[in-house]
Length: 283
Image (tube, rainbow, N blue to C red; front, side, top):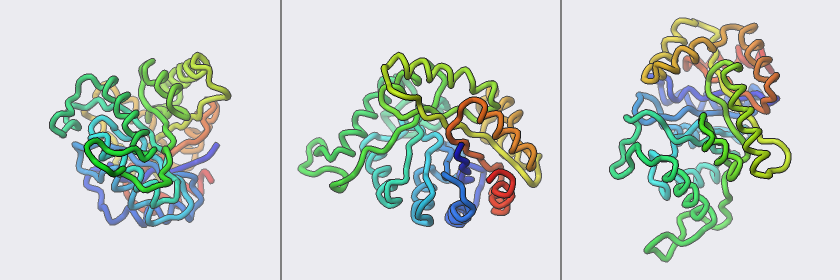
């Protein structure tokens, strides 16, 4: 199982200047992937910006949006921006996508929090058209350079529609940031949808969880601030925060037992020393 680490872009009031150095240290430590967490209505750094900063600061480590709330964006603009990030990184980006569930994230006029499933499917078709270099509507030009690729897609969510979409268009599924027993039914649902869609092999499974080596209570407070808008979910996330060397090892083992292909440890603070502490424990 590969082991990645999150970028602290959605810790409240994070210092944005930390992100490039965080990315460099994570790559030097040997983590497989840098992941982001995405929201609009929160005092953090937009996931696309964090990924672009990480792409410019590194040369080999993978990049993953975990997960990007696709329908809050105009689709052509998002597709172009993501193609640029992937290009800058040399093709290291994998997109983790979800539809969103918090009304305050939908800030673009004309893109409300309604009809999200149908709009998401239409947006995905637009992404493919943009990445394939098709001409923009009412324009003689494509939006991206020649040679732009279709970025690999991983989907997050809990519904059968999510599993079916992932089986139809993606490479796999990413679990929510909760303990392994909560994620197991979703992995089973994804496997069933993959088989029903006639896909060969197995879906790629990613999972995520929060960790702290320093001040656990401060870390949990940061996690709570991010998830408190979803009270039915926040307690499960907090229960899964791993503390210290044994805590992160136990978390890793629980997800390895589920058949996870890559686990990404999300930080609860933006203390750069947390990178080396985690690497020493799990790499």
